[in-house]
Length: 394
Figure: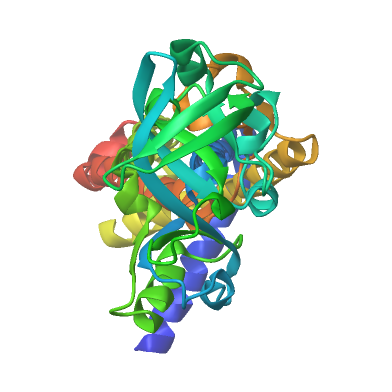
């Protein structure tokens, strides 16, 4: 029985192939619709992934890192956190207090850092508009443009930092002024070196940067398991839920676009095959008169659609790959002029499309599903026509 079904499938596949070859021009122009849709949507999907990559690179790469570790004591070193798949770990300490100049004061969070290490992993140094990072042993401070304007400070100005609740006072010289254009970040942060505080009891915070190709969830799980009970770790998805939701929303939007495009393509395929059937109604009538069943005719139409879709999708996938590789080769797409005030593109506006399972397989898979749905219309039309009516219309 299986051998018989296989033989029938091979027979109708051959007949379907011959039908498509005989109607070469019609098949070609119909295939172009599928080829262009698959290629365009693969490229757009890869571009969407590239936008997500850029947004993540601009946000976690600016300062925060992919994973943040809280409450680490001095017995734990940054090197001990650098597991496989982690590019680097930055040590930071945060002290809240007030920054004062003359009679002007404002609340600030002073982040204590190791500037050379920060510069190697983050892009904050690219946002320093005047001066430089603080230097160890210099009792210096890096402040935002907003803070500098409010305190009327400039490079070389001495500011008084008063730590709360210890109420200790430290005098710091402004070494640089930065501006990220992210109000929440600029408004409340200033930076100094780790050596200005000698208190070993202050817990430190880790900024973990993972390697390309490593999943954030895998690195997070490894850190949580190894340092369970000694520190708390959170990924960027927890600390930046707005970015996570925005990325999810763009995936949903892209999926809707793919479905809508192929719904239109499916209507075109269905209409085209209706035209094919009407034009070749004589052949179908003769086949029905020879004893070919409606089920076999339906199989013939479905196989024709599958063959055409497979060939067209294959060509579309190849064109999609070529388009993605070409844009990557020329350095991506620069949208900096459109993102100058966007907090998710503070470092770079370069978009590099990237092929993933979603971006590469979703368009052709959707094309296949809708093409199969499109084949039902002509199959049902042909099944409803009686052989006698078809032959009388010849």
